[in-house]
Image (cartoon, rainbow, N blue to C red):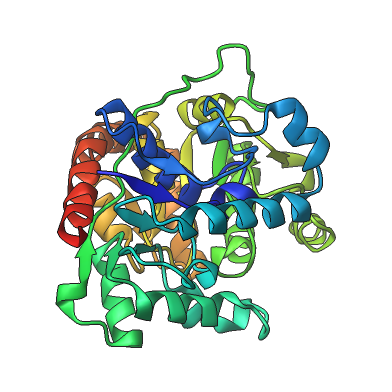
Length: 362
């Protein structure tokens, strides 16, 4: 089996759930002897494939493709060239740009991670090209992988895709290739943890309002990992809530993020919608209690191992978080149940089911 994965997500993500998903599949295939599988890149700064040998060395890659737009442009040209040779069994594009369709003579499968752009258009630019790109790629795909039953349901409701064309394959969790960083010390001793992007549907504004009285009442703090430095609007939000001095943003490495999970009071995921919610599994792996929204895929992934709240109701969110802060026994039960829930998502199952899809297309 010779599968190709294209450049897209590896060109623009250094860290992130989608690139981790594809890196996990690629690494697992190689671990199991599928050494002809390839990611069509000249060069990448992506953390999850940092050990991969690229046509350009790190020295040349940083010298010739230092600018992000140039990196993406040349990786795209290289991907188009390799894909155009059709020297593979199946193509698995890593995102929705349909640039590869012209000249493609082999089957391709696309993974649909969520339907956020279609369900929450108010949070995106009217000129966002992802929506038409996504529609074109989905309709032309030989097969579609949906990462949850929730995503499959949304996909079918919006695009009317027949059952036979979709396989639901949950994310597999690859055990930490990078352990917690023993030298990293979190900025606070007692803190709640928020991970990832904070824009729009991620519901960060309501979360800040819900958590504000708890930080004061219990003399705890808030750590936001990833998502970039706080912007002007976010800083103003924190100032108005009066928690700017109790909140810190960290651009954490993988090892530092594991440490943050392990030492947090709880991980809170207030998003209005996700296709899967990989951070829940990250938290389970790191023995961290999870508190999350009761919408979309969260029950499917979290089962009975998390405390749920209505993400549109600030008081309900606050009550759920306070339940865990106030009860060590509840937190311990969540840790124990999280370990059991994590066992339902082995990487081996994800890999085998993905391979089954590839085999059926060849």
